[in-house]
Length: 101
Image 1 (cartoon, rainbow, N blue to C red):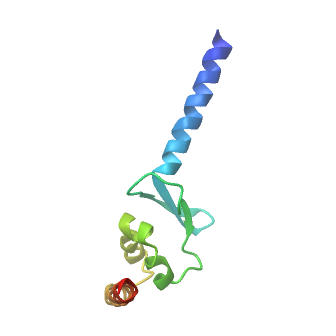
Image 2 (spheres, rainbow, N blue to C red; image 1 turned 60 degrees about the horizontal axis):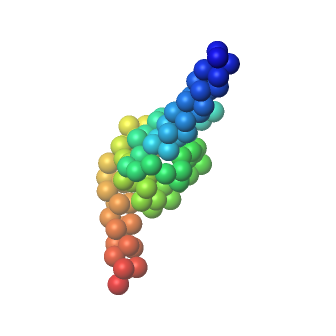
């Protein structure tokens, strides 16, 4: 009886862990420095994302991360300044408008 309860417990832990991965981005800055960012919708896309070697332009082109609020984390960590962020976002929006036409 106890062994069956242990099995249910571990299955429950696995389900909770998978659900947590589906609903959060893990933005990695270094080996032991990361931030957990809430996703807009459950998916496995960009669950783990490293900002260690990524350029701000590349990161901000990813709509899933922009919707989750990656730009706020980049501002807080000093990876990009407010005027530079506005410049990048304007450039990306213009490129998307051209592609839509």
